Length: 238
Image (tube, rainbow, N blue to C red; front, side):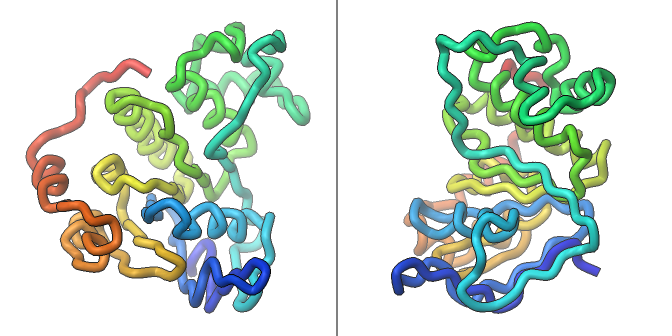
């Protein structure tokens, strides 16, 4: 049985369609990436899945007691506000010390507990957000373009960490991106979205599809060839 399924989901705003006829299922333990250009409805789809937005039409079904962890696209913290990582992890409610320590370790953020949030690098900040999402040991982990602002090496390291999280927790991972080449090695399945699902399949299948190339106007054959024959750096600084 799928962990979560959308059936014929439409979302409109002020009479303007944003998503149309979305049929999507997520299986336990898989990593699925949704790609598409700006304005394609990726964030709207995530809001439907986390329950922050009701569809105009259609329905969503999910496993009983489904727990979701969410890493947002943006999170602004006032740099003048003194807040350690440990204090941030206690918002909006406190968790046992051992649970916080384990979540930081699983996110590759161990050793950062006493640092100030404002002093973290981009990659460290994203790992702390990931740790916060892991505190509830989610069955479904959602990341909304969580690599924004990270350079290539930090992005590679972050996606390797996501693979470790999937392996260690056995959770399903749903990621949003606009760059297929950035998630080639991290995804089991890619869904190409532009208001509707244009195509889906393995990263190589989607990269080779005319629907994807027409949508983004990019010669993804080069990107596929690169990621087939070049592994990401074994170690990357976050």
